[in-house]
Image 1 (cartoon, helix red, strand yellow):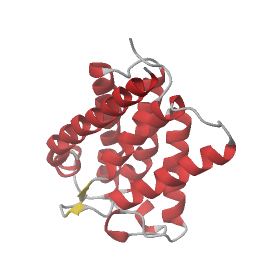
Image 2 (tube, one colour; image 1 turned 180 degrees about the vertical axis):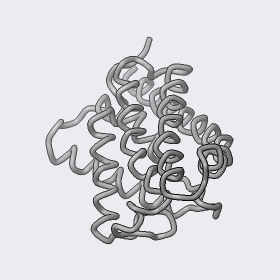
Image 3 (spheres, rainbow, N blue to C red; image 1 turned 45 degrees about the horizontal axis):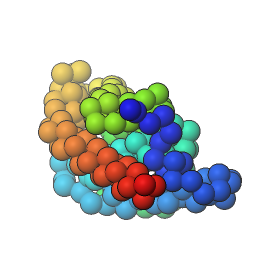
Image 4 (tube, rainbow, N blue to C red; image 1 turned 120 degrees about the vertical axis):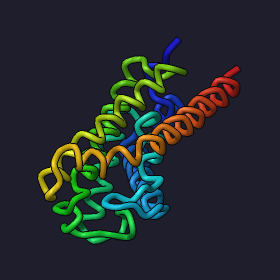
Length: 190
């Protein structure tokens, strides 16, 4: 049976504004730290950033996951070096990777939304992660197409094709982590 409550809210505790703010700040710092683990590729480096976003999307739910990624973008815009390679400021929002930055918010929100609608066990969770991750590539590729001399196929080949296998591995890792956490949580209740 699928859970409709994401993992972190299901863990219980006070559902206070302080708890939610703490979750958002922790999540945004996790994404920022994961963005620094990078394999250089052009034009978009491959990082562990999307793995962190998947974990947040699969465990926080739509609103908290979306708020976490908006906070992350705000931290970067304010000058904190949280983007890949320690980048920060407004320039990343105008460069060739800006579509991915905006797509991160949609990815986290959609993943959380799908989990809240029952895609939260086994293959359902894989489906939620795959759908949201696929959606991430849409603004990433389209932005690169608009912001560079590449045609649409060239933008896809540069910004999506090299990362598909890595994203599939990250989906598997995220789903294994979250299903393991659910199993541990359920065993504690019994």
